[in-house]
Image 1 (cartoon, rainbow, N blue to C red):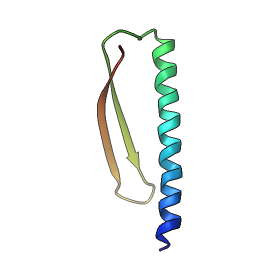
Image 2 (cartoon, one colour; image 1 turned 30 degrees about the vertical axis):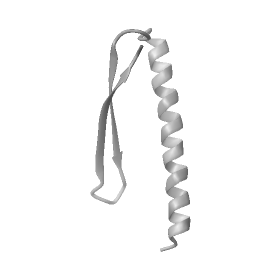
Image 3 (tube, helix red, strand yellow; image 1 turned 90 degrees about the vertical axis):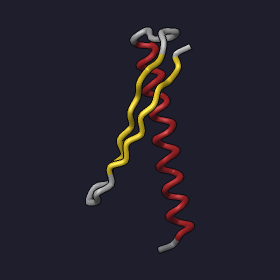
Amino acid sequence: MDDQKFNMSMRKFLKEVGVTSQQAIEETVRAEDLGGKGKLKVKAVLTAEGTDLNHVVEGEIDLG
């Protein structure tokens, strides 16, 4: 395995996940007028086709 190629590809994927997820959350907060209304509970689930990967990250975003 080419570690450098793998690392770059993974970073590109994670950057895409981060940017698009932030945009989706911001759009939801604006569309549902949630700004300043406590905390938003969020969950991200990562799977990989053809593997047993099922990674779950849960958290809260303070809406100010």
